[in-house]
Length: 173
Image 1 (cartoon, rainbow, N blue to C red):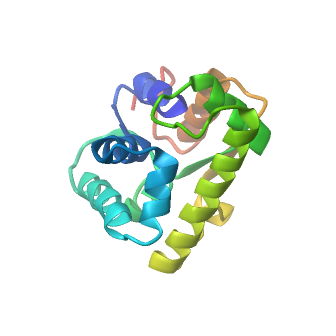
Image 2: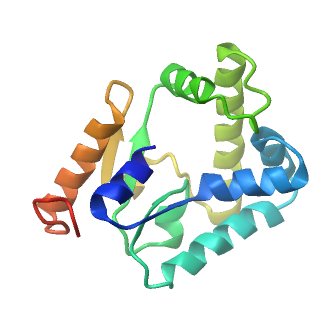
């Protein structure tokens, strides 16, 4: 939601690694959590997402991307980490009612599914690349979104871009 809104404010494309993963899960007839579990023993899944991300780096396009490892594959970019308390994340995900995420039958199940997916991804990325995507030192800006609206988060990111002279006052790049 934030990435899409930011892309709109900046008048650039929005790209989502989560969409890549949801597409791949749907193609296989499974949930994202199920695909994450498969990815623990089948590196082809992560490698496909990583390849899609890497191709974007050389595309010459301007875009906003939401991705766990976007900062790693697109090093010459502004890297923003959106943090959130686990219970808030679960409420947001559960409230979205995504049909592909079959494990999210209630709020407690959603908390567990997010924690399991996060740890699964974290372990794989450490194994594959020797990096912990949850380490805030990888990012130019860290925003705790727990008590902010998406619009407030976008405002903080745009302000950060203005401070770096990367956008004009109207938000456009």
